[in-house]
Length: 343
Image (cartoon, rainbow, N blue to C red; front, side):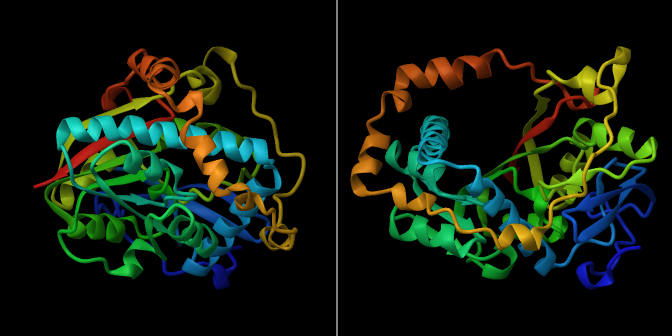
């Protein structure tokens, strides 16, 4: 039975397409403390926790997830992760400048801010961030000197028509009111402004969990994904709220046979242990990973050979050129990419 202290009201309609054709899909363990039931929309395929976890439950799960990541980090892995984010930010900066020479960008869920720093250092664009973690947001503000709004997008009430480009990578699947979230993005974008979204594809990303549940097991969920779009449902949600989808595709199909169990691949393996406890994880000692970022360390990052043009082409641009981009109609692909414009 659901612990009603950790969930809110139940959706009677799909937040993506507004259909009332909702059907139970599966149960999952959201950490050890928060069992959740997921419904699927029969019309657009969106799948989401119903009832949704409360804001406080989500905050607890997100803080626990950040702590779990920190416990596995070393100064070397922290530097490598920042270097990769910085390089990707530099590469996006080039694309932005081809579209518009200068503008104002906002990265939602900016984490440690190095992606935004890459954009800032490689273009004439102004960059800001939004981050729910006070620790991370303070680091972005004080150490990276990038304006970071600490809180949720919905709670911040940023000014209307303020941004030319909004980055929403691996975030919207964590939101318990995605319809409100998309409306807020629309409101703060300038006319003609664009939103770039990357999010898991419900069809393939949930396939292993569905197979596990169908065989009598309860899947564990630690990534705090509570809303899964399909390509169709994401396009519909954007269009309902006034966007025009400029480009959309799915990608990362390497594990499609395993995930769907096609041709005998990907046998279902039942979980051996209970889900980790969010509250026990939060009691683990804090890893002082951000303390490595002295001024000298930041200069080392910016001048590292692996953030240069040649390495960026070899490591990021070239693989992207050969990435199989699957049209929405085929449904497969772990991740959905969407670029939409406010009209």
